[in-house]
Image (cartoon, rainbow, N blue to C red; front, side, top):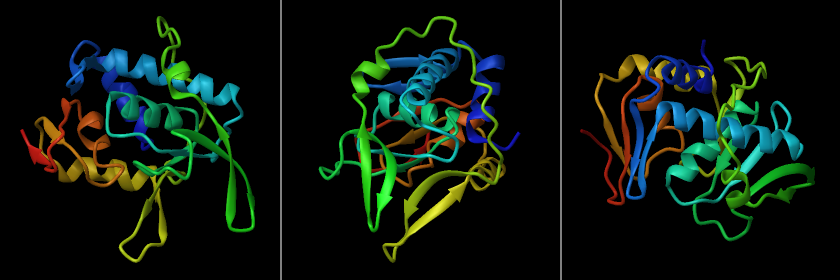
Length: 194
């Protein structure tokens, strides 16, 4: 089980009521996080996202960001997180490339996140551990494809404990969620173990 979302689904099954995510606006349990991400995944699949498809997200760090990115992974997609980018909608599926420019299918995040989540089972989409989970900009400005297995391998390097996260790499917040810890989204520009 080396797909990021499968590790979190396992935590939801075994630690359902445990707080997964804490923000200024409230607390999401592992069960709630998983159910909301399942609803997002279904919405994205219905809008045309297919395995390996890219979703570009321009949302500020929030519970909705974590739910959305987890939903992208559950739908078999990969994400490019560009916080604060005005060049793209808050959430868009890259539907085609015309040379160097992508075309996007804009998606209204609030409508997607407002869908009912009761009894939302996990999607049976097969994702290999070598599939890309996210795309990250490197220091040189090039884009690096990060596979699920590279992110899940980070679990071994992290001790137990809860994490306070504000802004780091676009995959750092998966590690505490894959290990059953509580992730607190902070507004200060620090990342420390709680």
